[in-house]
Amino acid sequence: KNNELSSPSAEAIDLLCKNTGVSKVIAITRSGFAARALSLRNLNVPIIAVSDDKRNSKSFNILPGVNGIFYTKKFKKTNLDFFKKVLEFLYDQKHIVIKDKILVTAVAYPTSGNRMNLIQIHSVKDLKRLLNWREIWWMRSSIYMKSNFVLEVAINHFDNIKKAKEIINKRLKS
Image 1 (cartoon, one colour):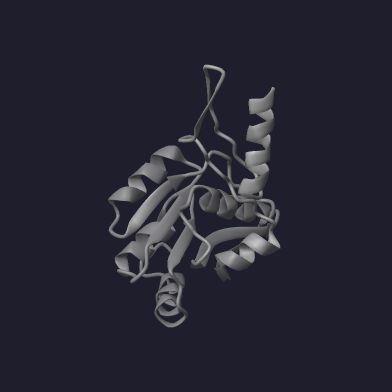
Image 2 (cartoon, one colour):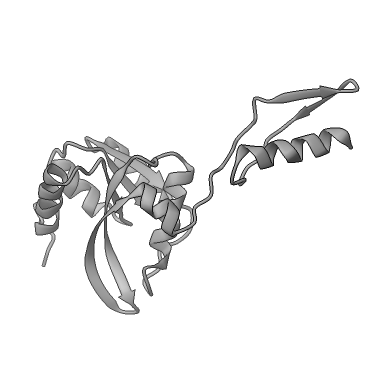
């Protein structure tokens, strides 16, 4: 039974953080076990603990070095596909950025009923390219005036600012 907070996974993660240039650890966890175990190790990088349980995610914030994040969709125990969505969510919310090298850890279910401890290291830059993540452009502060009308622009999910400007200009002309 692996209920000790000094788990072999936490020890391995500690060593990886010290020797691989990881800039952030992402713990995908419902209960917070991983967050607690990693917090006790005093890692030299921030720990982002993501949970689909709102109360648990808030409680992670009291752990030293841990930032608790609530993910609104339920984690699945049938495959690993939701991991990609969790990481994209963290990227969209700016918890991870293009220059980060992240270590992801979780209890994973590669197929229904089969459980494994997962540790992966990724470059966010590579994830963005491989998984086709799109940039989100927020332009809330941009205010355009035309014919005594004020148009506040908040456009998101565009691949580039040029496309966003084209849409703004079309709206201004109409």
